[in-house]
Length: 172
Image (cartoon, rainbow, N blue to C red):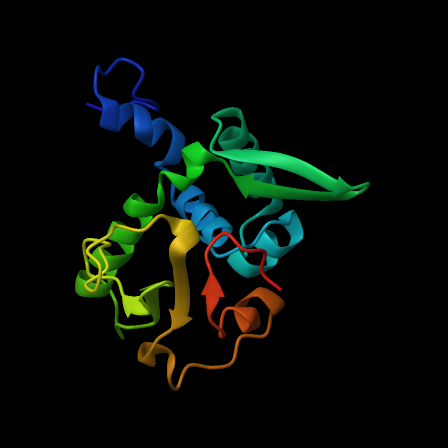
């Protein structure tokens, strides 16, 4: 029996969520949005996603209320995570942790720290110092030891992500 193209007939919240975020490029786009990547051209260069696919995913995430499209000045469009989008942080952190444990050739490429406590989050996304499960605005992504020996990225976003970056802050 062939797999259907959507989950509309299923009475399942997970299936409904997958309708919005269950595609490979979508999760990578969201990851980069958490890292502070906001512009189409930066997402395109960093992810090497086909432009048509990126445009379609950004449109669907905007329609679903996960991202909002802003034009801070004429001709410059940015995509920012909405509250609904920011609520996906624990999901992305959990998937990242799963990947570190079960799929990474070299683990420890990224470390996530609770900014107020300067402590690395545990696998459940909690701070071992204060016990909080911080939201993305209180988390800093830092390059980890697993990046040692990797070739230097050639595109601007990859180079910028070699420095600590507070989530949701625009990538400079």
